[in-house]
Amino acid sequence: MDKNNKRELKNGIQREIINLVVYNDEDFLSPYSGDDQEIISQEVAGFLNSRAKRLKRHKQVHIKISSNKIEESEQKVYSRAIQNYYNNEKSEIERKQNFYLLIGSILTLVAIAIFTILYLLIIKLNLPILNEIITVVGWVFLWEAVDLFCIRTPLLQSQRRICQNLINAKITYHGLEPKARTKNIKILSD
Image (tube, rainbow, N blue to C red):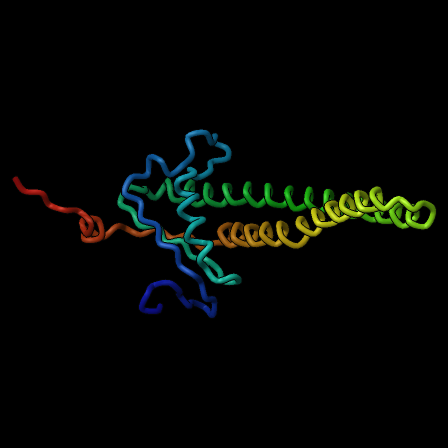
């Protein structure tokens, strides 16, 4: 392990470490998840997302959860809840990617049709104002398709990769050291 405790190398696999300290596990799970499909709360997910965005692209992840409140029977439930949450997120991202692919393809076809109509109008009619309007409309459709294919889809692929890394994360539980808890407490005197 390196000095910053950010990476570990074990069995030839380098993992990026996300340290999660849990003082109170009452809000670890979403209050709206059922017993059959527990998911983590938005607060826990927000913390994991903020840490996972900083990690290197193709590294595996190790989530180290430090707590004296999480019982051994809850560890499997919490690990499964993390995986369930990110499986749901990954599915939503994949639906968006498919939607963007469909809409982008339709917009590209519409732009091609507009430019074909424009070409035919230039040959047959000499209407410069109509030609300009059709040209602008065609470029708008084409730009929207480019936006979906080249800007939004790569962002979704990055989010999908983060979800996949968190789904495949190694999750370990450790007791919380007493000094770690009192580190930020200020003692007030009268």
